Image 1 (cartoon, rainbow over the protein chains, first blue to last red):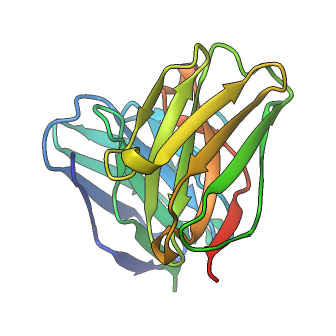
Image 2 (cartoon, each protein chain N blue to C red):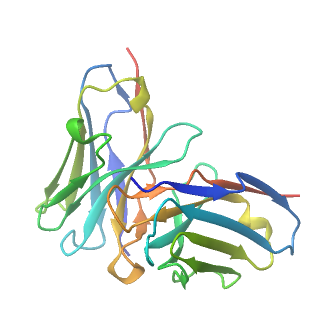
Length: 107
Length: 119
């Protein structure tokens, strides 16, 4: 199985801050890397697919980058509604695997 | 727009079979791949497996010996069966669609259904 490791596990930031979350795969996943946002008590919501493609309806302050084994989710200017847990996922090989999550709190 | 809704018992006894159904509304179940994902309380996400519109399946090896996912196109539903459950199978269970226009990511999710395993 491909192991996905996110860092940090939690982060606290202020409104307007730039926030970066990292995801590292135990082996290359090509471009099969996606990001989800999960708010408390809700199902995950797709933010980014194919490393850097923004899902329809997702604010442009979210962006993704990376290649091979190292990937990044960036929120350019943090908003109150961004408080959530963020997960990366690889779709390169079975079983599909997720990172352990990064909990983002607003200061 | 397409919506997914999970249904099934919220409580299952140890050693019994967990059975859930996901109903697809607002669109056809055909031409897509459909997955089950679970999340234990306070934990991360675990992919259980998928079924394609043609009925082909892929399962997580960690659960493969106990899992069956099936499709009922006439009812626009797909189902999860997890045998010989233990307390470790207590989780929120989600169904989701792999979106062709979203790099095969899970672009639509059900709201989830909580299943507790307890006697």
